[in-house]
Amino acid sequence: MKKIIVSIIITVFVLSSGNVLAQGKGDSKSFGKKMCTELNLTDTQQKSIEDLKAEKQKKLIDLKAEIQKKQIDMKKLLADGFTNENEFLKLTDYISKLKSEMRSLNAKHLVAVSKILNDDQKKMWLEKTRFNNDRGERMGCKNMKNDMMKRHMKGDRKGLGKEIQIEKKIIKE
Image 1 (cartoon, rainbow, N blue to C red):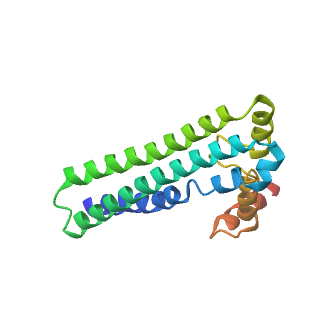
Image 2: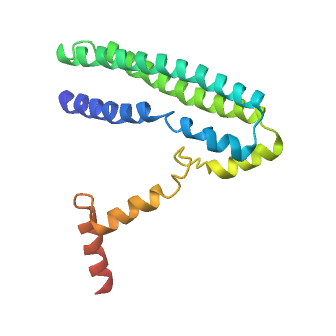
Image 3: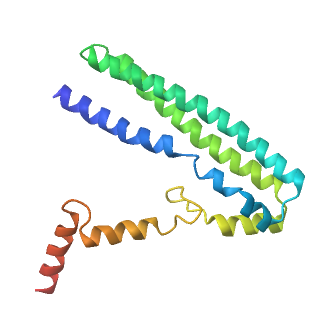
């Protein structure tokens, strides 16, 4: 029973670690050359935003590296036969704390950028980036959920499409 619970926990961590490593990549597009020209940013504003972005990226690199180190420690604990449950739980909590710190860092960065922009630029920026608080997506990813639903309906995902088709048949009958 313990082995099943441990393997479930490991699976959750492995799947969630991919999401953590994917965070922050969208920022490179948020203030690219196109966005700077569309918002008509001054040189001072551009420099300030670039500095903020560089500082954020450095901190994110440190946090990601620390998460990866702790995940290696967790794997080692599991390979040793899962003899120290308390240490495993401490590592789990610590990794969660680091992930939360990354999300907080991203949020603070957005607030700092918004303070650099004037009111008109801020309004245009928010319209162009299309923030979606539901899943944290931005920069044209608003249709991602719709695309995923279409794939499900077509049956591209294993078994899900078939279940939906069966449900449709039952409803029609």
